Length: 309
Image 1 (cartoon, helix red, strand yellow):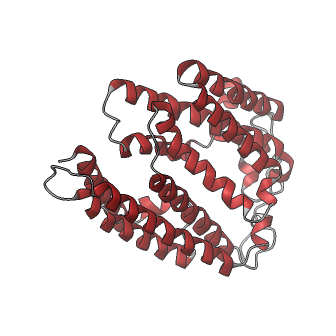
Image 2 (tube, one colour; image 1 turned 180 degrees about the vertical axis):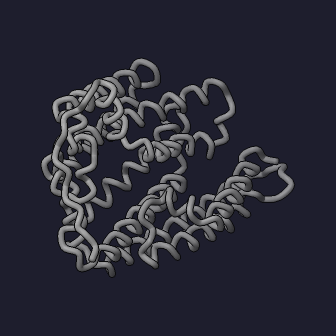
């Protein structure tokens, strides 16, 4: 018979090095890969090939990572007591006592102040405003919005959309409406597919998942990710065809051809969503070789389109 894992009692941090290690773990380094989305707008506009552009995009990516880290630190400090009663979350550094709650609050607050300030000084005021808006939205999500039906999906999706847009804002690049629609609904597709997978896997397991999932039905979440997938595909096709109408000197119409791997990627990802195993997007992509190859094919075609080769 399988033994139940009991929450580990809080322990005191043994050294400053242990606290620093715990702080780093609390910032979720595995989630930093999401901030690669910062390069999407400059790359889509073909303006990622100068030292200035690369430096600005790298700086904005670091600042966005700092803001996300601030949210994680404050969230874990706020939820420390509840996390100690959870079979998995009790292992988080703050809940386990490796990082004292006041230290987590202080580190999160410092990052929340320093990142927008650095953005205002080193990039542009609008980037700083977007970072402040992201922080406000995510902290509101941690406090209350994650308990509000539909709004929780919108907030998480908006976080992805802001990542994708802020690189263009930093470089003063006009953002295509089709780019924004594709990115927004693509993010909603993955977010709702993740929620659907959680709901399917945790069905009938009381207390094993986030409370809000009990308010959603699996049918509703399936409807959301199917709707989002359809809109994302339509918007991408409209964008590719619209841009493809511009005279070009490339050997083949790579922008239009890139619709094929994009649609295949959506269809392939939907297989995992339908099975209820689309938990973490990065894990899905890295675990499935076919999906990774489709993604590389899309990247190659799109790169050729941007380079007008």
